[in-house]
Picture (spheres, rainbow, N blue to C red):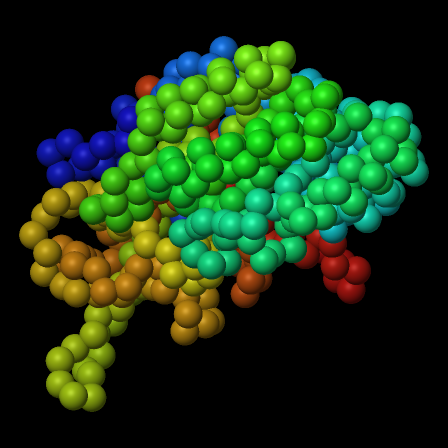
Length: 418
Ligand SMILES: Cc1ncc(COP(=O)(O)O)c(C=O)c1O
């Protein structure tokens, strides 16, 4: 549980401040219990009996996090060959891994196929290559349903984007599949990321099911309606109603299965929904700068020991993350400030125009809801190390990735002996 009690932020049974002191800052902290709750809530909301959840590990690919979902019975959604490899190494059955690559080379295709994962084809050209290499085998296909949704234009994947096979090209796709004697066992679509209402996901499910009937595909075993399930980031945002989503999908799949004569598997592949609110980034205030503004007034910059290299979502997507002073949660707001990082870019702003209590150097701030697309999008920009990651489970805490060292960062350079 990540909650404030008496003005203090707790992660599991730990004070956030205690963790910052023990492991140093900046520090990614995840609460295992929150991930389990998210998974169970979603899984139980979908009553259709043949349902599978694939954890989309692009959201957060720490091995310990993958293990949490493997232990809960999830499969894995992987978008790169090494995500597949990691999945195999942490113990996912290859048949429970779906590889949805985009612009996949022949070497990559072979690599993934050798590992035993199911390949989800992204283009007609890729299907030709696959057919040439593996005629007579089973395959899944990513359909682009012609519309998409997302919290930002950059994460909308349906519609006029580079992803999937458009509905208008399905006829050609089926011809290619026939030519190579391929058995299409899966149909897939992913609309985008950060969807806060059930409708688009239900609509895409309907589109895929109708496609099966209209094309006369007879071998379909699973229909993957993608991930993209959103979480509220802002104080006034409402969570996605997974009960409604679950019951609508259940109804659709029950009806379809009766018509089709087989209980096709309903697959969901969420990332953010499972891990987003389970992570916080703890950072230390290292500088506070007040500058006079030209037309009068002052601007406050709260400078921290992290930055866009550790959390790029605000800079990349104008994303909003709540910022909580861990020892003064709910204290009276006294300053209007930008919370900024230590990277040499003026876009290195983690939170803009926030009302915060009076802060001083050494105070610890928690940047909330960073479990998804936080660490997994980090970089070494400015030659700064990535933070450590820890996972809390009640009264236990475990280091799940150490902080990088200078040696880690220069190890692959050939012009330096260390
Ligand atoms: C193919 C695919 N599946 C699943 C996801 C997971 O998205 P989210 O984390 O929003 O659930 C993504 C993310 O973009 C994706 O590209």
